[in-house]
Image (cartoon, rainbow, N blue to C red; front, side, top):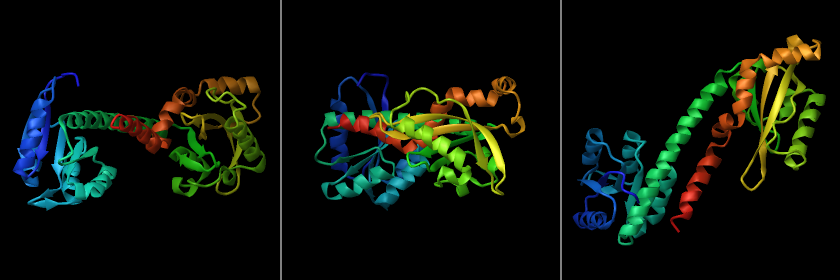
Length: 310
């Protein structure tokens, strides 16, 4: 670890012997300075978080004034932005692993930790938490962008089911978002439109079209709640896993019902002026990844760092 200034550590541990051992490990880690604040009760730790800025929390779950997952929950709820490493005994290892699934960054088994493992765990816990924070910021930014535009945006998974629908698309068709989610796209298009859409996606999923190229823009006829037609202009962009597996497709649709029958060149000129349409088209994949891929992306990041623990 390169020295970038002291790392402020909150050590919540009521066992004096364990606390001494951990403090000694911190002193033996080269090239980095640690400021360690020891709290022997959960209440002392929570009070310290109110007063000081900590980069990491090392948390024993069995304390005089709190035990088990409630200990973690109180710290996590008070300071969700601070990475937490669980300190556990060998007999509680499975329980500690479950808490990592609840939001802790890592766990360390007392008696099996050396200074190298401690340093590595702290380093990667801080890095992972930082990445998670950036993902949340990205998700919120793009969620607002996608929800506020005047065009419909939707994602169909590899089974042609709607995994994401923005409020504008639901409004355009007279439905609510929950009413559309997990439904086959065919439930909202006429047979010809459904065939056109799925035929194109089939080519993409089979690798017959260059996956990074934005699909041709084409017209589709959707059906709203009362069965009447809504003609839209749709452009589709496929998403793939790193191994090339097809995940589904992001699409954006613009209502052109009032433009139907207009000379093609005039329609193209009107579409070119549709700033919302091209704003999202230019940023579609990046805008939608946090919304559609949140779990996949987070797991991929964690997997990268988990590889370094082994």
